[in-house]
Length: 203
Image 1 (tube, rainbow, N blue to C red):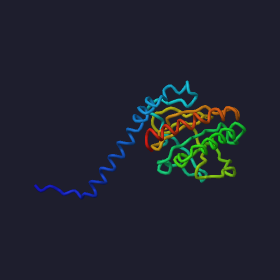
Image 2: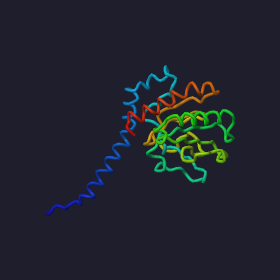
Image 3: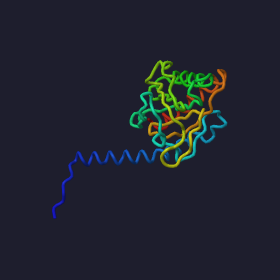
Image 4: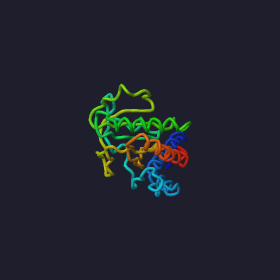
């Protein structure tokens, strides 16, 4: 019997697909390893975020809709790091405005890393904040909730802020700030966490 010859281009493409799949499934383990060695398991003493338990919730477990009322798809979110904030009301009250401002100001201090991060605000049922968005590339709006619709995973809490990596793993949670002074004091911890993650993963 003669052996079939596999096109080198096909073989190369197959290898890329397999490598990508390995990276996607290995990402939670890699992040857990990085978290341990970067000291994220002791973040409570640093007043930064709280590391979620692995396996981490994933973007594709949730059903969120954009301003065009179309479902958000992960292919439009990969390659970026994300701060995801869940206001408790559709009408962005004082607490909501304060936390969006906190994320915006902290984002601006990231320097060259700011291009690797985007902010996503997920309102409960309706998006009525569109007129206040000045930079739609770095601040995106959606509606939905933190209840997983696919698979098993932790529910994302209303009112909280989360850090999501480029693979869609939601691995860090932050309490909202309650006043301007707290926002100033906690801005460094929020910024340092994402900088360490970007540096440690090289992504």
